[in-house]
Length: 102
Image (cartoon, rainbow, N blue to C red; front, side, top):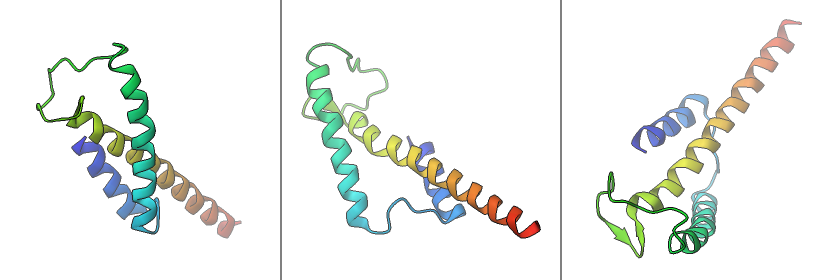
């Protein structure tokens, strides 16, 4: 998760692509998706759709969820959206350069 977070931050800085211009928007969407996914987890974990076996878990729990599970729902969407925005910005830059050449 550290690698994904670091890569996301690097892409934001390198391509000057920010997911949200304001911290409030970032927090709103992060907490919104956290709530949606935790609702699913509240159903899935007791019904044994998946389990947290203890291997690779540091042992810190928030309710029935390991800390890593909650952190996962912040890191992965952030990384995926950052890659998407960086690729979009990169392709726009290439299109503008091609338009100047023609």
